[in-house]
Image (cartoon, rainbow, N blue to C red; front, side, top):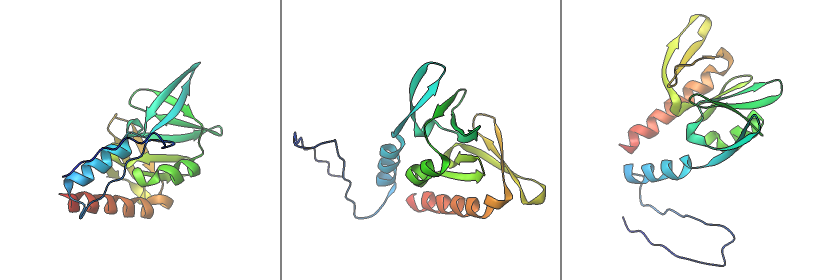
Length: 153
């Protein structure tokens, strides 16, 4: 792979363009790396923390406030679920309930349950319930993500 670096003081912000003939594992890995470093701001007590999107296990709305659940911490963020999904949904975030959005990359396993529900076992040991109204869309996204991963290898 050829890599070129250009410095341009006239740019208003840094920019990376990736050109490729076909999306192989090298390009897919580069895309995932670049996208995973996106940061949002979270608040907890009187402190502010930069949160990398890849650190988020799931989001939940509680009393009209949005919370990002990380491995062992929870931070309030200034997003609605709809706005967060519009901005970051393509990075593997999907709605699984009226007030829940999950990071597909942080699901360890899925267990079926009664009444078409499913339990999502997260990498940090937490268990989330996939509401049956969101099941079809979730399964479609899961299949699509799996297909992309297989095609990249």
